[in-house]
Amino acid sequence: MPESTIEQILVTAINQALCDKDSFLSILQENIETVILHENDQTLAGIDARLQELQMELVKLANSKAEYDKVGDEIYHLRDEKQKVQLESIGWDELKKRMADMSTFLKKQSAALTEYDEPLVRRLIEKVSVYEDKFTVEFKSGVAVDVDE
Image 1 (cartoon, rainbow, N blue to C red):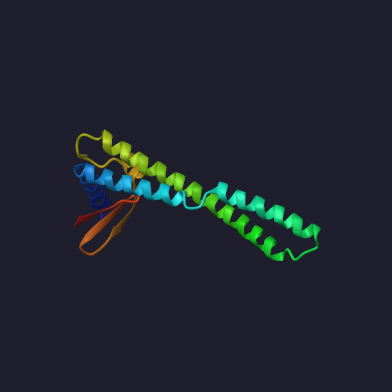
Image 2: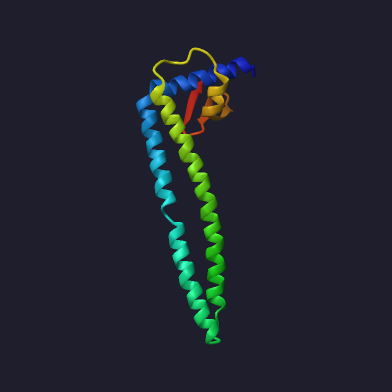
């Protein structure tokens, strides 16, 4: 596939996003809200509070020479969960940033693109999938646009 064809597909996809800016911004806003809601499902503060409770319980059990394997296992599990949540949080922050960038770009654009702009494409586009009858352009914000060949 010639590079010029892909460049034109990318310009078309960006223009489709610009022409339907309000709908696109609405989808972006929904995506941002979904990210924020997901992010709040399990907070680090909640995990930390539970870890502190379990550590206190572990000390009491150890002092009384009671079985504390179950509490210890839960502490290890929560530590792993905390690390996982911290890593996910970094990913969610990056996704929120990309969505905000896309939203800012769309709000600023007043006219359709007339030619391919490499820095803009690198900033906005995640990937292009080629099918027999269409192209699907996925923006870094998570939104996809289909462009017929």
